[in-house]
Length: 277
Image (cartoon, rainbow, N blue to C red; front, side, top):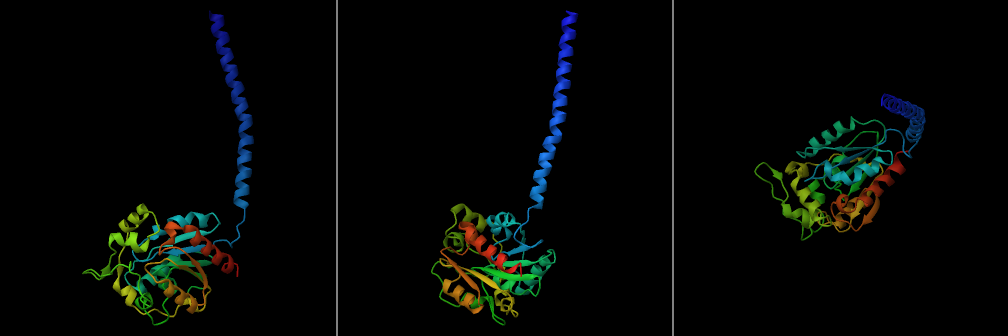
């Protein structure tokens, strides 16, 4: 009995030593393979200069989460991405907030604005900003207001009435997201957008714009042909006036929800053609 116990313990110990030795021998090989793979991944170059950043600016009645379907695909192309928050208390306040966001970047930048924030991205004087991308965005000229260009052409019958509250802020009715702001998005996405909306102050659309950066920087414009908030004719008028490269698509006012690929493609086109200059 004692002999059997001894042999059993000896066999178990021997196997333990054998397995331990086997693992010890295989671990360096596995670690080496992982290190080589990590080295390959880290050394892989992208098509863009180092520290190239896409700064995405949200529109009225939105926040940075509206770019949720766009961020990771851009990062996979080796680009840094920042969703810059703006307070929407006045055009000047929003311009200052954008400049603070730009201070957090290094290297070359492409600014992307949606709807109202097209006016905001054009206020920049930063030399590192190499191009501007407008996603169904407003582009007032010097001395113009956002309201003037917004109402340049006839409004869609689905465009909601925008009435300021007692604090001089404008909120959107919940059903406006399903009818006008994001009518091609899923019902769930439209409901989420309505729930997280942030209001815009009347002063934002009444303050005259400074000399816009689109007069000196290359621009791209995604015309949303099925937009119910900003008339597509108005979008083409602004895009033609600034000499933008126009990219029309059959999308609604917020294509980042229903068709993010067209947004990503326009941003990447601008990045490829402007960041390497």
